[in-house]
Image (tube, rainbow, N blue to C red):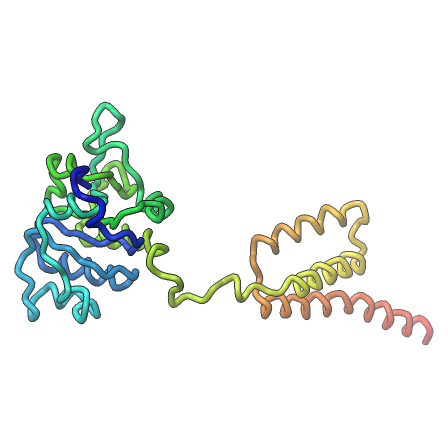
Length: 263
């Protein structure tokens, strides 16, 4: 963000980052990015020197439901406008290796940004460049910070639409309070049920004459296993039934043997 821009002209609320696309050549990539924004809760699309976005063309065809709001509401701006009005994060696959050059170094990963961007007291914009060459060194030199997606050293360059999708996915925690996926913490079995499961395991170890000197160690191992597993209530109840039946069988067999002896 330019230092000589009056801070009084900037919004102070922490709205989700805008997504800026610089000089995209393919309307389809713009549509793909708009769709990814819709998937992960981003709304403001800024376009610098965009291709023609025909409502009957490729961009709207690739945009999915984003054709209804994000794409038609996209704002065409200049690169100067971006750097003067936003804290800018330039996204690039190619970085410098150390601090001998600050054009592409230091850099953050998208996951790093998800942790840090909420502390930035300014409107922010994720800036993506052209399909073939990305953002130029001249453009990156005017941007506040660099972001890069970890990828194979042999081929780190992603398609423009792919790069934006991965980045927005990693930053979804800035925009989405919940997703379509169930909350796994809500389906974990209650601790009382899990404790009953441990008790039932203890009963089974006793019933099968598991060596007493090994029982504490075995129970610790079982607690670690179930602690990592986050069993659901249904799973825990099913296991309880199986363990209860397994515990009862030796007793039933002994009773049958005793009756046979008595007869």
